Length: 158
Image 1 (cartoon, rainbow, N blue to C red):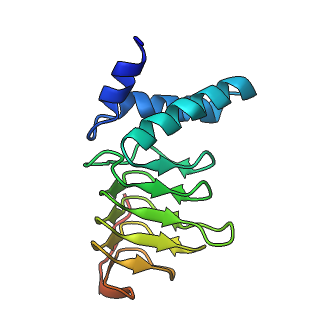
Image 2: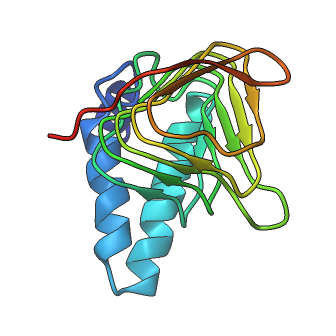
């Protein structure tokens, strides 16, 4: 019981350090038994907080989750770039084994849905409640249902 309480405490809010350490440890391990144990722990933590991140999901860096894992669903086929901010109740889902590829520095608003084998460029802002099923170029703002691009910004390369 000593390990369970700290794991549950860290799965609240944006303070998910232990969760992400276990997540990246699972991706680096060669032991099937250890990977299965880590998957069980990760799924328990995420499920208790109402979220899910699939075992094969590729996440570069640690995304900012201001509301924790509350309602966040990320498909096992999805790919998420660095420095992304994902709010509550976001679904990054798959259709036919294909899931979105999200670029770096994106903001995904509450209750947004991204589905299918789409490409979301870098520095894209997806508004709350948007349903995105088509490709989105770099530096755009996407809103509404069905999604529409309302703003294109110049993206500065570092």
